[in-house]
Image (cartoon, rainbow, N blue to C red; front, side):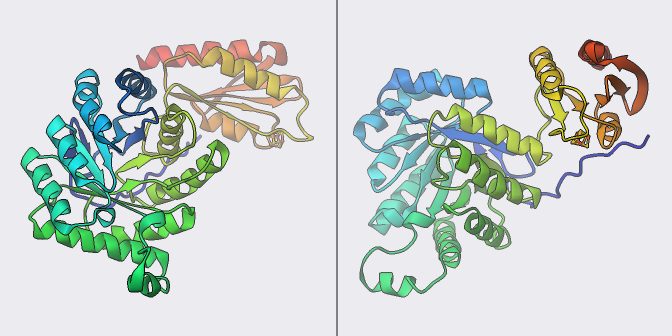
Length: 367
Ligand code: SF4
């Protein structure tokens, strides 16, 4: 039986920017980032959280640098972690200069919220001397002028257009200083605005893009918004690194980010991936119990395989044959498939044992 291959998007061509040991853009794999939520000056707590993020698969980590104590902690944090470290700076350029002196691997900056041009330029020059990139991060919440005539004028401009125009202004400014180690982000709290902003900027320059939705919300809403916006852009070939923003433990952001990459066909699923149907009135077995048992017994296997557990003969044989190993229930009997072929029929009570034996057999041939 002919089996389906997963189409992968043609990716936008972007220039390569090195962030410590990770290259962002230039056709490299899309990396997953996160940000700590401990007080940065609490070094032990921050380092502990970074280690948990790294174990979960985070590849670049960002910490907030809101004050001198946080800036003073950066060198020690950096010495205790393996991940590239990004300093997140708002308002105070002196903190960016201290972060660069402490050896961070990248600075994230919104030039619009540093008052004096010469202060931004001092940071750009310091990053250039240190050989590290700057992410220009323009967010929907801070892009509009807050006071004066500019506020009235900008109120009439579409938010996405404003974000794109502002980002391009900053890019031209940095380029005029002969600085091109730039990563861009244009995050809005709406998934659709985020997508529109990234689509526009993607066609206007070749700098690598850091994807994310700002203030995405608590877990459920945030996961859905991120899956739509980040996943949708990746499916269009746009994006070089991602950060899912969720209120709560940042480790969850990494799990979600990795799953978005898997769903977008940009990363091999880790471990066994179980596909199962929702069941309906045609299903004559307790499929939820079978799926749960399969999940429990297969969950710890370190092999990348798709395993299908399907409820009846309507869609079951097709999906089971598409998976590496699958079973389609037909009443009290299970039809066991592997590699696209029907192997045999098995009674319902033996179906998970048979499925697992077959998964083991196939994983043994892969190692
Ligand atoms: Fe219903 Fe069968 Fe489809 Fe499962 S595979 S949802 S039981 S029709």
